[in-house]
Amino acid sequence: MVSDFKFDYVIIGSGVAGLHVAYQFSENKFFDSKRIAIVDRSIIPESDRILSFWEENEGVWDTVVHSSWNSVLFKSADVNLNIHLENHTYKSLYFKEFSSFCLDKIKRKPNFCFLEEEILSINERAELVELQLTTSNLKSGFVFDSRISEDYFLNKNNFPSVIQSFKGWEVVFEEAVFDECSFTMMDYRYQWNNSNSFMYILPSSNKKALLEYTFFAPFTILNSELDAQIKGYLKTFFPNKKYTITTTEAGEIPMTSYPFSKGNTKKTLKIGTAGGWVKASTGYSFKFAEKNALLIVDQIIKQAPIRGYKQPKRFKFYDKLFIKVLKNQNTKGPEIFEKMYSKVKLNVLFRFLDETTSLKEEIGILLKLPYWPFIKALFLK
Ligand SMILES: Cc1cc2nc3c(=O)[nH]c(=O)nc-3n(C[C@H](O)[C@H](O)[C@H](O)COP(=O)(O)OP(=O)(O)OC[C@H]3O[C@@H](n4cnc5c(N)ncnc54)[C@H](O)[C@@H]3O)c2cc1C
Image (cartoon, rainbow, N blue to C red; front, side, top):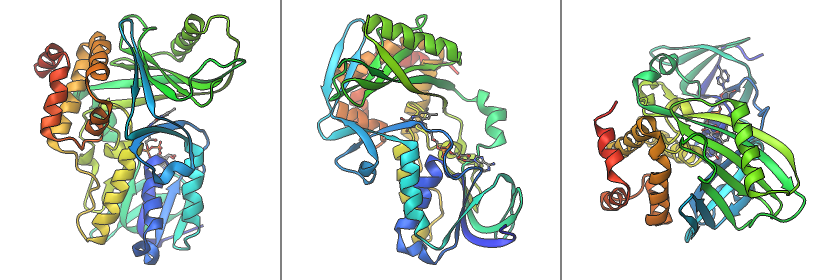
C-alpha cells in the first residue's frame, strides 16, 4: 500500500488520454527525474474496442495498427463514392494492444508507479493536490484527471449536444465479400426511420470486417434496435451469405459544446473526454489525445501553464453550429454528409477536422455544403 507518497505528477485514468500522456512522459528524458503515478480502477483494460484515426504518412502507433486503408467509400441512395486518400491513411488498432504497447514502454521507467485503486476525492491546496484513494492518500504537484466532472452531468442539457450511439459486430464470412483496400465511412442506404443513421465498415480482410451501425442523434437508441439494423443491413446487402459474429462492441460518445475547460484548475488539468479532447462534431479523440499529450510535455518543459491544446474559437463555432444542425434538423445529416464527401477534397476535410486548415480553406468547405440548415441553426438553441 502506498500512503502519503508525494509525486510530481499523478495521472488519473489509464484509458486513451491517460496512456497518451504517460507514454509521452516516458519518451522524454526530462521526466526521468520526476515521480509519476498512474491511478486507475483497472490499469489493464477489461474490455477491448477498435480505435480508428487518420494521419499523414507513418506514425508512432504503426507497430500496433492492425489494418489501414488508402481509400474511403461513401454510399447513399444517390451516390456511390470511392475516394483515394492521397497523403492520408486511415488506421485502426485494438485498444488493448495500444494499452500494452504503452504500458510496456512505461514500465521500463523506474520513476513510474501504478496504483489500481478508485479515486474518491481530490483537494487542491496552495502547494500541492491531495488525493484520497480507496486505501491510500497521495500528494502531487500536478494532476491529470480523466474523471468527467459532476458539473457536466448537471449542466450538459444547457449546451447543444447530440449522442453518437453505435454498435459493432465483427463478422467473418465464409467467402470473400469485402474489398480490404477501402473502408466505408458512411453507408446511408439502410437508414433508421429517417434519422441521421448509417453503417460504418472496417474490413480487415476480404472475409472479415467490423460493421458498426451508428447514429448522430439527439436521442439514444436501444441496443436491440442497433442489432436489428446490423442484421437488416447484412440481410439486404449480403443476401444468402453465411457469416459468424466473432466479437461485438458498443458505445455512446457525447458530441457536445459543453465547455470542459472550466473543470481545469491551477494544479489540475482535465484530460480525455473530461477535458474536451473528443472532437465535438465527429466523436474522434485518439489523435487529439496524442496532440494534447505532446503539447503538455512541451508546456511543462517550457514552464508554461499546463493547458494542452486550446481549440481556436472559429473551430468551436463550426463544431457548435454543426451539432445544432444535427440536433434540430437531424434528417438533414445525410444530405450534408453527401455534399461534404462528394464536393470537398478528403485531404482538406481531414485537415479541417484536425483543425489545421486556413480560414480561406474553411470558407471553401462551408460554401460547398447546403447553406440553409446552417443559417437556420444560427438562430436555434
Ligand atoms: C466501442 C468504442 C469504439 C470507439 N472508437 C473510436 C474510434 O474509432 N476513434 C476514436 O478516436 N475514438 C473512439 N472511441 C472513443 C474513445 O474510446 C474515447 O474518446 C476515449 O476512450 C476517451 O478517452 P478517456 O481517456 O477520456 O476515457 P477512457 O478511455 O474511458 O479512460 C478513462 C479511464 O479512467 C478511469 N477512471 C475513471 N474514473 C475513475 C476513478 N474515479 N478512479 C480511478 N479510475 C477512474 C477508467 O477506469 C478508465 O480506464 C470509441 C469508444 C468506444 C466505446
